[in-house]
Length: 469
Image (cartoon, rainbow, N blue to C red; front, side, top):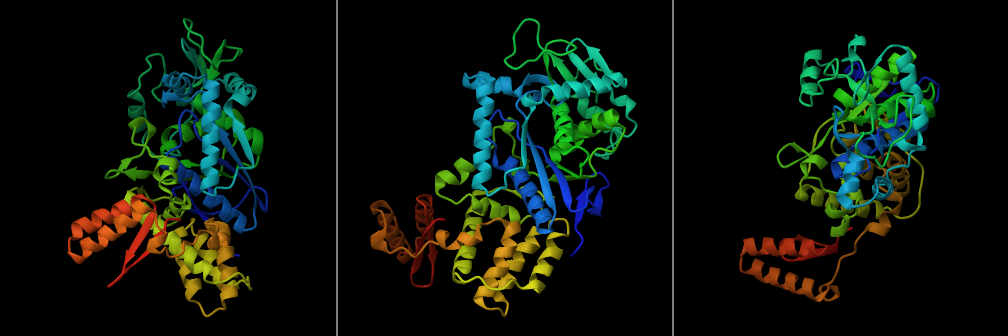
């Protein structure tokens, strides 16, 4: 077996993975705040975490994956300022916060299914684990890490000498970021809320009694309480997006280690952003977010095209979104399905040499672009079609592209007379434009045909038309 190396944000280097319990892995993956639809930038993080889990299982580890659902306590400002995102979502849609949480949690789970992302071993909601969060805050209070203000209980970060060990940023930089959302009652700019009091002049939809009064938990405390509850002492790997490093995960580590006196998780892995419009991060707050439904499903494109696109970029590198790039990924996936379908139905013998090469590549900090390239190598190898299929299907345990169902996705050539009338007319008009060498009009008509769910590939004298996967 090739050793598995993972880039640990905590040490800023690749480290050989060594689990706490031999043959078993405790994996905590930060889940969604369910006040709106997940956008495809969010979903890139969940794809990376799915690839990680599949690679761990490919290495014969038994993985217990815990994912939280944040349905309370995540304020609009990450520094504990502003309105609760759940309450804001409820106001926006004229529904209860509980209904908002249930609807968007269900929508998120449908997105995971569409992308072939494995369901976590444990789903846990913040609102289902309030007693555990209160107990953890009480422990911190007994140890002297908590102080009270008019709006809640706060964690005193000045009592943690290595508070910046995950971010690796000078403490002054973290303080400067914290000053953007200033709370004059905080002792230190980086201090964060453990429990927020309900306003005296208004009743919140989500609030609970506590030893300190009626209120609700802060955002960070839920992940500490629930990871320790469901993984116990098997705190191997904690994941999330790079936006969690400086605040959310830094605060998780501070409060957890203050409470237990022990190291929290051993390995911290973070996925890079999906960017849009020249490097700008996709975010709900920027109103530039695109969902799986409006980008792919409504346009008749298989959502696995996005998974295929994500495989081509290393998880620690930013990924650029463009409509053209996604269409190219759909074409590439369709081509792969066609190649796999051409191998037939007989599954032969796995090629162990190629499998070992695949394992070495994926065990180098999840190098999936190289792993995907190995699929092409298998297709060119001097193996029988049956043995090629066996090897590729083995690789697909990690890739997750449903290659065992390739025949279901392959679109046969479509004859002109089989087309809907409006598409047929566009095809004929495009042929006339090409004959007249009106390339601009021909290109426009190709886009029209594409928008109706058909792919047109030109050759020197004719064309090939297929329906999108």
